[in-house]
Length: 113
Image (tube, rainbow, N blue to C red; front, top):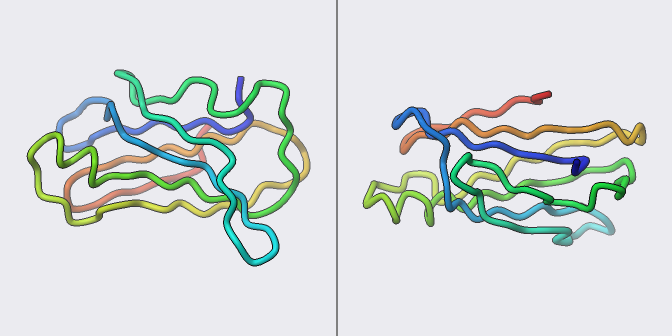
């Protein structure tokens, strides 16, 4: 399994958010570098965001969710055109799950398991 995973739930519709483009970035030398990207499947997840054997170094990372693309496909208003979740990894190599609970006018996140 990828060291970093995500799951997006559309809380307004009560179902996973499919077809959401997203990208994982690492912050180094005062700039963001994209490590991986994908699009959520019908379960709101991206399989294999990172190689299963890849251990990321400690540091600051960002998951960028293109919510405008998702809500545009639903012909819904887009108040938050994107969501950036910035988080820190330690050097333990453990799994980090970055879920996003999404609605047209709000979102929340937490460290999942």
